[in-house]
Length: 198
Image (cartoon, rainbow, N blue to C red; front, side, top):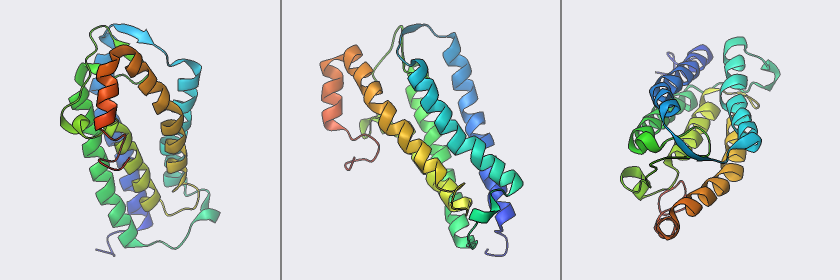
């Protein structure tokens, strides 16, 4: 097993993960464009956060996986660390797919509510309010494990942290304004991204 996993293989797995991410999201994004928007509060703030997340979890690490730069930040490759990254990446992609499916027509890439928006509180959403962000964090952990570089590895967690902590409060404010006491009660009985913990 350790002979199969090399830095090149780990980089290829990471790049395949990016492709899988887009394959999963594409049909939902395509459908979302056709649905009516009742309210949008994303704006420039949201676009900047999404750009930072995209740079840190896709663009910069993809450049590293393809070119090997910045190579000065590489550290000793550990095959078992990379194998753990494969497992975490598979889990992240599976969670990413399920969250899209469970949200259905209520999903949007930006901070928007639909014309007939419904509050989803079953499935994974019965335990955490933002399981899609849970999948993003898992993906960032997979990046850290697969790309054994002091910059390309952890940059995903930094970008994801910024997205989560600067976006989710606004997202929850929109949901509270839209659903009122129903959402407040939902917040009381669920965690944000880790069941029963946070």
